[in-house]
Length: 321
Image (tube, rainbow, N blue to C red; front, side, top):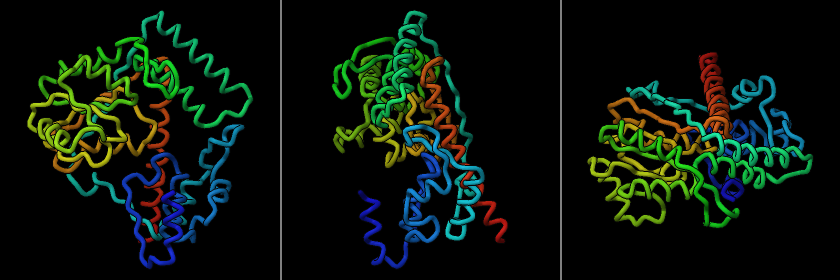
């Protein structure tokens, strides 16, 4: 992979600078590879296993989940602080307000009952005591997330899907009507989300790698000029590199939230960035009593890790000065 390839090149690179907006987007374990490339393992070591055992506590039997040990963020910050500078846009730029609005939704009783059965089967399998690969764990949880969004793939890995409900779609339409002509940037998680959205809003444009450069450029320009009311995309496609939207839009809708804090933050940064003159509104469609709540909590926990390491580094520098 890229990390191993980069490590092999280290002896030939005299000066190395790592740049990132989200150093620990999925937790403090993310820091290891970045600092290995920067200092060759001087501070956090050259063994990921040793780093993991030294600063983290295993929280599951299978050995896939870890949390920082007591005092780990501060200890890590003290070790890497001498070669780390933390800078926040809010501290140096006149940034507008960022407002997060969780729109709590509910499944109809009969669908909630069906959902609960899917979730019960999932938990039975997850708690069976058998080792389940991370991929399969994610597949089980994704099935409940799909249901919460309104459709479900008939078979894992196959494109055919089954329509379940339009609760989130109706909520999106309400936001569309309330936005009074303002363009919406909509982030979805599953491809059937996109198909459902496009069926309800045929004038919307799906921004993806399949979109030609000419059509992508036109979509961005139409969004900026107000001719395009809705631009939709997966965070992996539009979270990085989709620029110049802040000059027109200030409303983001999360049809389904993504597990990655990096993609979450970078998607919001398409509108909440330098040049944005209005408060940015982030609507999150959250289906109550479903695993939507798990994703929301996971993002909050990762954001907490991110904040803790940045705060610890800033405190380190303040002590040094």
